[in-house]
Amino acid sequence: MATIFTRIINGEIPCYKIAEDDRFFAFLDINPLMEGHTLVVPKQEVDYIFDLDDETLSGLILFSKKLAKAIREAIPCNRIGVAVIGLEVPHVHVHLVPMNSMGDVNFARPKLKFTPEEFSKTAEKIRSKVRL
Ligand code: AMP
Image (cartoon, rainbow, N blue to C red; front, side, top):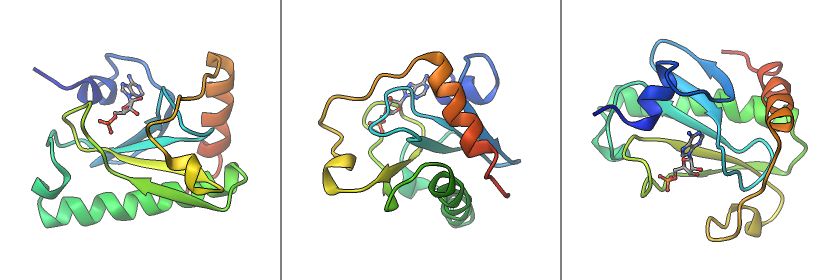
């Protein structure tokens, strides 16, 4: 069965989309640690990041770099934290989290809540900065 992220990529489940190309897709995490918390996913459905072939893995990092630059321009922060957890969804995804201090990337803390309007505004702010 397709993963939830494949269903998002295919447009079967809505998301706050940020960007895509032929191999990768980026959208806002629905349970964000910080405003602008973004997930970057390869369209290829693989569970574990280090099972990706070298070309897809390096492409994922380079795509994430472009997204991180856009997020940093859109959301005031010190830098963009990068994490790969993958315990919840068995489809590779890179978390890009705007951060100012270590606590901002503590995945054990309660997530932030935003309204659909707030998520849409955040996505639009980031989209306006994306240069693929
Ligand atoms: P993990 O697999 O532990 O890296 O966590 C999966 C992440 O995917 C969590 O941060 C979830 O909030 C996020 N997530 C799960 N379903 C969705 C969805 N439908 N839209 C956006 N983010 C999601």
